[in-house]
Each structure stands twice: as structure tokens, then as C-alpha cells.
Length: 163
Image 1 (cartoon, rainbow, N blue to C red):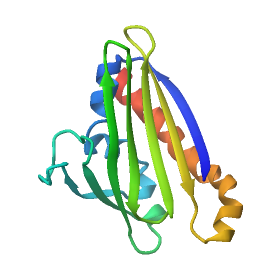
Image 2: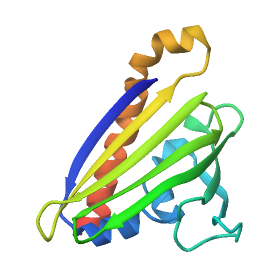
Image 3: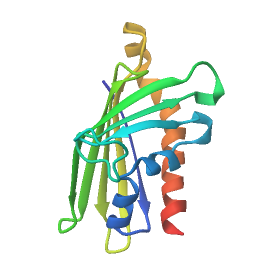
């Protein structure tokens, strides 16, 4: 798999940054408008609809229509890990695409306190592009599509949490 990584420092406490990233509303707020994202359904680990917090085992079903072109793409993600340790000043959650446009997609979100009033947000995505051998061959240039999305995510995180 190919790996894409990016991080940003946010002038907001770890607990606030963590809470913001723990809901489907945070996902929508951090997705560029040109992706035309819709969260169609969320289910908690006990299969309850619309959980307040996305815990380990939660499922998010969304659709996107990048640039408004073509049919909507279905994306089913599962939160497979979620840990918050305020005493240690770090947190992590990881989601894995169970169904969608990529043969493989695993996104690890790491948060580390940087003093009392700032947080380092680190995104790591391990992915494989569609297209079999061709997709694997061009996978390393996938960062061309990832970089603007994650730049936007990080700018929005700062704008929404630092204000």
C-alpha cells in the first residue's frame, strides 16, 4: 500500500480537537465542498442509529460526488480503533473503508498535546488506488489528489477551532 501523511499544529487544547473529530458533523465540516459529501447513515457499535460519538465499531455510510461529476460514490467506513489518554496527552482513532472506491483505505488520525493550549494533528492514510496493477503502479502519485483534501481539512480545523 501507498502511504500519505500530513500534520498541522492547531492552537486549541487536545480535548477540544478530539471532541470535534469524534462526530460525523466534524467529518462533514472538514470535507471540501467540491466533494459533495453526504453522510447517509451512522450506526454505533451496538447498531444504534446516529450515535453522538463515533466509538470503536461505529459505521459511517456516506456518499460523495467529486466535482459534481458522475454518479455518487458510496463509502462505508468502520472505526476500528479509538483511544484518548488525556494524562499522556495523546489520542488516536483509525477508520477503515469497508466498501467504496478504493480497494484498500486505512486512515489513522493521531492527536498530540503541544502544551496546554495546542494540539498536533497527524493524518496517515494507507491506500491502494483502483485499477489493479495499473492502480498500484500509479499509487505513489495519488498524493496529488490527497494533498489538497488534507490541506483543506487542516486549514478548516484551524479556522473552526482556533477562532
